[in-house]
Amino acid sequence: MGVTGTQVLSTSAADSAANSAAETGRPAVQIAHLRKTYGSLVAVDDVSFSVATGEIFGILGPNGAGKTTTVECAIGLRVPDAGTIRLHGLDPRTDRDRVHEIVGVQLQASAMPAKLRVGEILDMYRSFYRDPADVGELIEALGLAGKLRDYYKSLSGGQRQRLSVALALIGRPKIAVLDEMTTGLDPGARREAWDLIAGIRASGVTILLVTHFMEEAERLCDRVALVDNGRVVALDTPVNLAARARGGKTVRFVPSAPFPDLLLSSLPEVTRVERGGRHVTVTGTGELVNAVILTLAAAGVTARDVQLDSSNLEDAFLRLTGRHLANDSTTADSTTADSTTADDAAADSTTEGASS
Amino acid sequence: MNTLSLARTPTPTAPATSRLTGRARRSAFGKIVLNEARLTWRRPISPIGGIGIPVVLLVIFGELPSFHQRLSSFGGSTIFDAYVPILMTFGLAMLALLGLPLPLVSYRELGVLRRLSTTPVPPSWMLAAQAVVQLVIAAIAVIIVLVVSIVAFGASAPVSPAGFVVSVAVAIAGLFAIGLLIAAVAKTSTAANVISRLVFFPLMFFAGLWLPRALMPSILLDVSNYTPVGAAVQAIQDSMQTGFPPTAPLLVLAAYAVVFGYLASRFFRWE
Image (cartoon, rainbow over all chains, first blue to last red):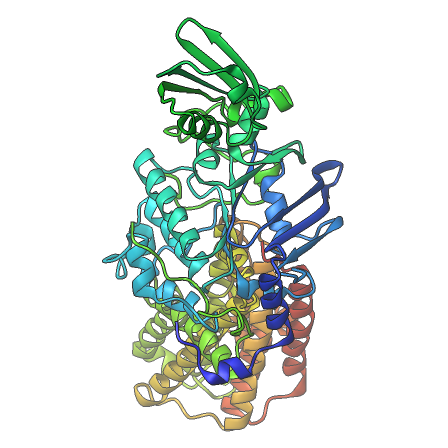
């Protein structure tokens, strides 16, 4: 997008603050010791994390874990009881207007008037921002091209969800907050949504993704905060979280030629090397597979029949909390994610058949 | 998968954000008003209730010969003359009590207001936009009833045009404030609907829809004087037939505007 001279001249103090933050690598999102209670219910309890610019950060946990409350505080919809929140250095409470310019939000369960057309809704939201995205480009990318003249009420659940994402992106935000964006979608629509998120990130937007689908977090997120009962129980990359669940990752292979154990056991990533028949089993952490394969290749050995034994986030969550993430989390096809818990009830409202 | 070009700026030193300037703000508000107008047009409950019903009743009453007899009990004017301000007030009350609060409550229910509060535009703009749309319909309703009564049925133009405008304005202010309080306290669309009707129909009695104020027993008239619709009919009628209306009905309406407006702003919830 072109930038005119006048726009450059009208740079405000907050703009420069936000920009210098990005330049110096200050996190896009910083949350420290966030706490929020509803009466006697502690929805969020001492949550801290930061999200780097351009990162896809997942907040994963069962319904009622405090995920939605956390992001609602982050975007200024709720007032936290304690803790600090900074979005590119801006406080969502005191810098509301500027925060709303740089953060695009896709809320759980928010509908539009039934008798507005898609194009009319987009056009209206577009006028709220100073430097909005191109509607044609946006709807093309979101698969809503040709729907501009359709009434909101005639859209399918998936289309409404995509419109909601389009509205979150129409202000060309630096941070996109997507709350349960695939809940209620059929498997095909969910996979499309995942592609979409990858596409949004490719355009440089930082993404805060709230989900209770393990598979979603595993596929999309650079890092994931596992949240349970209002607390962050673990925060790492999906791969490392899964590895932590079983105390390491395992690679099993058949070497093309003999090699000494020391070749691999001396690697920092490797914790144990075992042999059984033709198979070698290596246990370790980090970039274990790369390290093993590269080291073997350098020694002229090829690893055949490579098997990765990886646990997933579901295992990690079970191990860390003793509870299952969600009854339906292992099957992305399920559409049973109704929000009936304290966490989600606040955001709950009667939509006109928003779920498919 | 198509790629999105959402990158704000090609260089990190370029401006990232700035609030909307004056013209952009007006344009944003204009877009909200435009969409509210579209919604009203596509589901024309307000225009039908606020303009359609009063005009149809006006035409029916105008066609009745007995309504055009000058009666001493009506201070020498006709029943038709008495009904002109009543039907204007009917339209205004319809718009204020049903047209204004129902969309707002449903927007809150749907999360429209909540969604809006995550944008640079405050949700109060939606309320203002809705008020603008209903205000325009109210103005059209009053003008059409006035013009039809004069042109088609030979009623006389307001004796005090300024008094007429002032009366209609304070009537709108008082009635709209009541509508906003309904929007504030009703938690669901169903509740808003019930409350609105429970308020509207008794008020129409006191406006004189079934029994014009000239025929009301004095105790009933006393009550009517202190209802917003009774005060509205009195003020509009006086401005049409005798001159600038007395202070009492104007003060009653202003009091409704202030008290109910305050309560509405106090209790209104955006989510």
